[in-house]
Length: 163
Image (tube, rainbow, N blue to C red; front, side, top):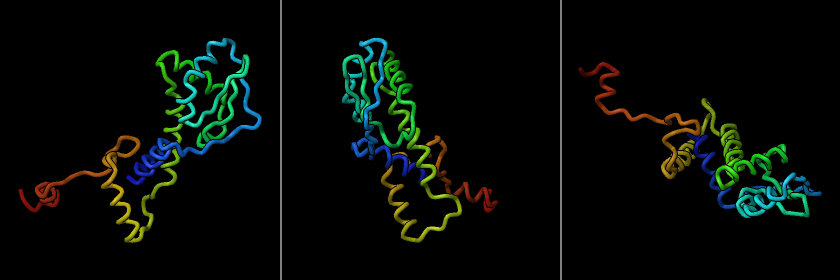
């Protein structure tokens, strides 16, 4: 459950545009075989910037001056071609968002409370308050339920206290 809270907090942070950017100096230059492809990306420049990808056009080249830090070392050219394909197919660059969300999911797994980890009473209470405030706390990032409800009669049946 904590993993889900960390994941949602990361996504919220990204949506608030506080994503860390790794600026490339010099900018990464990609020569695209068709100028239409550069124009297609430039048309979505602000959408891409919202996800931490800073691009510009210079003659027959696409300049990438910043990438989201959270992506680490990535194949920039491969990412650009994936984005072009997605924009052509769906009208928007979905791949970048998916990459970032997948990495947030992986990071949240590693940054979360682990089974058997000791928490103070204050940490437990803080955690429960976060659960109450989060709309997605009923399931983990992988879609599994984080809790189950048992009625009194269910408990009685389990412990063979009543028929």
